[in-house]
Image (tube, rainbow, N blue to C red; front, side, top):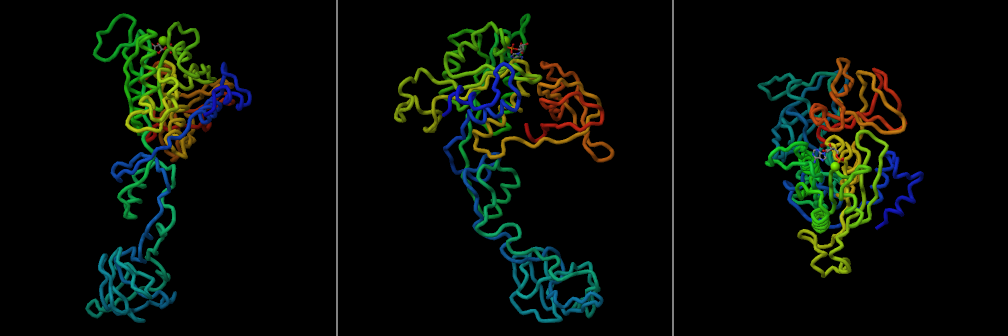
Length: 449
Ligand code: AMP
Ligand code: MG
């Protein structure tokens, strides 16, 4: 486990007062560690979980050569490019019921999609292509339409026995569930779920159900963070709004560090913030406070909160305080992501930094989603020297290419434009103004958050 100082020394040009977005990812990647406990779950419980070991195919799929069409199977060596081929129908092969007899030259078999191809037959002519004669006993394959091997699915063309079907570190998608089921697997081994505790800070923040009062705002961050974490497949621990009082903050951090692998807070990390949040983070852990060269966002605290109350017994596995949740084996330190207070800044810092870090902790080997390229429909002002994330609406232009339009008010507290947007336009650190028609990178929300 590296100290924050050591990580800082490893990063060239590290400046906590003006940290480029890419360095934030680098730093977090070095700070966090993947979980080490795994469990076996049924396929229906495995969606979105991360595989803890390769799934090796116990069988070949398909298990036999089989027909891709309803039609007639025959030996394709008889095809001649300029001559029709006439064949006698000697039987029928159904899916799930193989033909047992022999098929000789000048003969064929009526065959259904998925039925096993008998030995010696390698080609299927779809039924709609043939002409029939002799009371359907004889078919004629027209010249020039087929070549040997057509309309046959090969044994193992999906997966060969012994090959990795899905690799360790993959997040299981609906397609992966289907693939594992096609191998006859009822269970898979996945990393345990990550537990993430979160709370909002700030004396002006109202919980739902509280009466409005002057100068106060309802808490929205806990709800977006809840949604973002739930989509990610984390176990969430909602700790509410924590008042700006040292005793309450201390209790919240300690409880969170005991129960969770990571803690997400919002608010109270700005420069000159006159509250106890930063002081408590410092007191309870190894924490750095950054000003990130980005917009929106900027302030962020990162580090480890250590459950000081468990003190010297921290490394004693037999101690109760070592237990976290229901399993043992996790330390009582938790990674802290102290996000800014502004609701859009919370979402942007989560998507850009926290999400990839959490995925890494979840054991996922592809923690960053690919960016899309879209044409900007309008000029965008951008200062080089910081990364800007603008809410954007991506659509398909009449020419079939993707285009993007900045969505509404870009103020860092304006959530309504976040709701209208379907992605974030990422204007990179060194990038300057964008002209209308220029391509920009977009981080899509859809299916991601
Ligand atoms: P801070 O980072 O604490 O200075 O907060 C910046 C802005 O975000 C202030 O206008 C806060 O009122 C607002 N804010 C902080 N936390 C929340 C929250 N949980 N929900 C909604 N707005 C918040
Ligand atoms: Mg505040």
